[in-house]
Length: 165
Image (cartoon, rainbow, N blue to C red):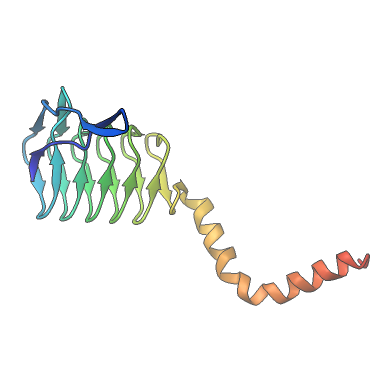
């Protein structure tokens, strides 16, 4: 669906009051939008999808987002309101972005990445909470080695507690 109301509410006297969504959606040339994708119209301005953008199935682009030219969004990518995506950005499947983050030109967000901060141009991130991909790889290696290493770690901790070296 293209042009649905964005999810905008304010609290007033203990009630949720809908903020009118009177903006629009601008879609550039040579854009592909997959099935079951939603693009919300802006609150007062424009939600913008740049030229050559390819959006897979089941994606959500919230109100007031801007996606730069030639960017790719793979299935289940979800963008909170007001996000800015630069040119040539690649987002793997199931990328999640909180409201109002910016993704620099040429950045790559690996599948399953959760973006909670701005991403620098050309940066590659991966992880439930986005981290530089090299750091996430190291953490994954360590995590996978823990079951085998855990008996030795607990034995060393026990020796330390007993004052042994």
